Structure formats: C-alpha cells, structure tokens
Amino acid sequence: MLRAWGQPMRPTRLPEPAIKLSETPEIFESGFYGVIKRAIIIGNGFAGAENQCIGLVRALGLSGRHSIYRVSRPRGGINEWLHWLPISLHKKVDYFITQVFGYSQFQIVAPETSGLSQVLEADARQIAKMAYQTFEREGPLLVVASGRDTISVASSIKRLAPENVFVVQIQHPRTHLNRFDMVITPCHDYYPLTPHAQEQIPWFLRRWITPREPPDQHVVLTVGALHQADSAALRSAASVWHDELAVLPKPLFVVNVGGPTSNCTYGVDLAKQLTAMLQGVIWSCGSIRVSFSRRTPEKVAKIIVNEFSNNPKVFIWNGEDPNPHMGHLAWADAFLITADSVSMLSEACSTGKPVYVIGAERCVWKFAYFQKSLQERGVVRPFTGKEDISENWSYPPLNDLAEAANRVKKALAERGWRLCS
Image 1: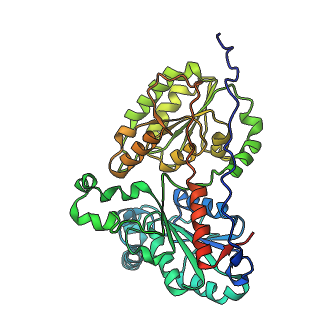
Image 2: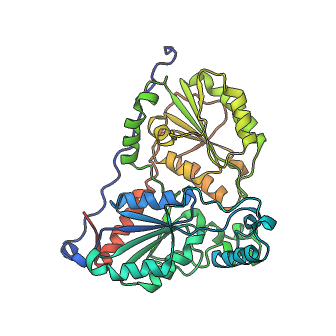
C-alpha cells in the first residue's frame, strides 16, 4: 500500500541510557581521601579534541565539577607552517621572530584569542602544586587531556604529583605510555603497526606518527572517538529542539558535511557527487537538514546551497547560533556524513540509526581502516544515491563512551579511589 506524502514512517528512536557503571567495591566506600570530586580538562582549543574530554567527564558524573585549561600555540602567518614543531619549541621560535622582526613581517593576522580569554593556559607545575596542596581537603584530582599538544603537560602533571592525580590521555601519545594512568585511543591508531600500513609511511617518520609499542593493560581501545552525545544529552536535546524538529515531515534525513583533510582529500568533485546523489533519494525523504562544519570549504558549501536553497524539503543551517547539531542527532531518522569526520561518524553511530557515508574511498592510511571497521560492524553503509531513506535498518550502537568510563572506574578502584556519588 502506498504511503501518504509526508506521513511518519516510524517513530523517532532515542538511544537507551548507557549501561550503568560497575559498582565500587565496598572496601573503598569509606575512604575520604580516595574520593574524586573534581576534574581538570587539558584542551588544545579544538572542539573535536576537547569534546572527547568533556564527554568522558560527563560520563563519569563530574559534569559541572571540572575546569578547562588550554595549551595554545601561536597562530597566524608563518606559525601555520610551524605547527609540527613541539609546542615548547614553537613558542620559542615565535617569541624570537616577534622580538626580532615583529608580527607585521611574518604574520598575516594577529594570534587568535577569540573564545580563549576565559580559559587559563595549562601550566603543569601550577596544576600539580594545586593537586598536592588540596589533596587532604578535596581528594584526588582527575586530569583528562586530548590532543598532541597536551601530551607533555599531562605527563608532567603525572610526574610532579603521582600520588595526587589520575591522568587520562585521550588519543595516542605515540610513546612512553607509562607516563599516564590510562590512555584511551581508537583501534585505528594501531593500524600503523601492520606491514601494509608501514609501506605508506616513510621509515624516518614512523617514530613520530606511529605507536612505538603495543597496547598494554592500561590502554583502552575504542572503535571511534569519544563525544558528548550520550543518552542524557540527546534526550535533553530532543526536548530543546522539539518545537522545531518534531513537526517536520518524516523521515528526517540529516546531512553533515565536514571538510577535506590530508588523509581524506576532496573538493568540489565530492560536492557535485553529493548533490547528484541527494537528488536521487529526495523523493523518499519527508525533509532534509544540511549542516556544514567549520572546516567545510566555501566552494563546497556553495555548490550544495545553490542546488538546494530553493527546495522546500531542504533546510540548510546558515552557521549562526543556536547550532542544531545535537537536535539533529536526537530527531533524525537517518544520517549522511562525509568520511573525513571521525567525530561526526562516532556520534551518529552511537544512536543506532541508519548512517550513510560518502567519500570513504578517498580516505587513506588509518582513516581508511576506520571506515572499513565501521562497514564490517554494519554501523554504516556507503551512500549510492539509490536508497529509500524511509527504509529502517539497525545495528548494535557504538558504546565507546560508557565502556571507556567503566574502564576508568575499574582502574580507580584498583588504586583504592572512587568517584563521588
């Protein structure tokens, strides 16, 4: 029987609450000095890295009990060519250039400070000193860091106050795993250990961009990236965005467009492919919502906007607040995501809803391995432009966040510590 145009095909599904974290052994219930009531996040100014830290802290029940510090690099002009230097050396080079030549000679724009004025610069000695001096009154300090630039700060905090902190490094530090209490990283970070992958990396670069040792007992391997889109966050977003998104004709197809990277290159070619394929499935959609990321090139966005701006079924977010991303995750019936974004794919695949990917064939190295692992798990399908978006299919949702939080709790218990209830 034919369905009426715009009628719901199936109820919107929200993820079930994450598996409850394991109970703390009774032997640790009464130790006041072993109760973690606070956390510090060491970020690098990039949302993709910092959201992983915030998501883990939320999953551990410390939302609202954390402070954010940042490790910030000099930016603008010649600094964009120096970002591969260790951050301490980069700052020294920038200081020298500034003192000798001034910004006008080498910087196209002044260093970016927008959004950072309220965030303190991460100082390992000060944080370690604070953890030591407040230990008897406040208990241990949980430190969660993510990103290459945060590695030296996080490991220094651990070295300076080993008895007062528990340090979690998200994303692989490549070496010296014993400098952290726990490392949480995707499985594809270990792809470079395979012979095939080593053929893609010059030998003189391997020690800098690949793990130098296999994972040990305190390395937690995930499928994708950690994020903030847990069950509680999505149910809250469903309520906030109810009036705008609940009334849209079903099925609601959300399209998230990222931006090319060195390991997943594309340009207007992918934009043209995406628009042509969307035209092939638009008949089966009640409504389509398109969002671009900060990395989306203007020429890519322009092609999509020009193609669909006058289509009554399609809404394209203009990039102004409020950002509908969490609302889209909560209310969408299916997703189409460009292959470059590990974060967006990880979030969508945690919902259990159909996720289609475009551009996976353009990924190389460990990012190609990531795409392959998602397809083998059945959590994504390649987008062909011939789909019926009203068709429902399901899979075991990615549960990396809850599993990582469980491992942190178990490691704390082994140390005689626990999280504040």
